Image 1 (cartoon, rainbow, N blue to C red):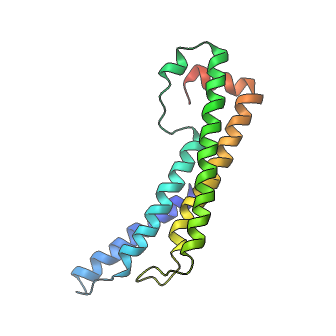
Image 2: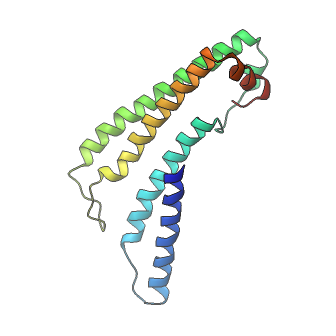
Image 3: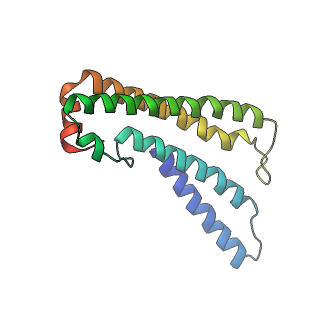
Length: 154
């Protein structure tokens, strides 16, 4: 979350520089748009991973809440496994995309395209790890599992 927060601050500062350069100096810094695209990728993907970690992501629990507790636990386990699988896929294919884009430079920034695409790889790894940790809590920690089910924190 701290990296995402720093990225937001950097993006605000660079857009401030863009406005100052365009309207005060009458020279538009062209690199700001490319940097903003890189930062938005990291902000979005890291925010998604943080949502998995804090259990603050959007979820529809109506059907799960209507089932008996043992089925609810099974649904939590299946949900965590599916999200972990998606996280692993993001990591794997993000890694492939980063390898592919390493030789291409981003215009105006002169850094490898892999800098932008690595955000999906990092997010996938985090989503995988956070989902596995949630899965372990669901399976082995009865107190936290009961709190998730009774309070609707999922």
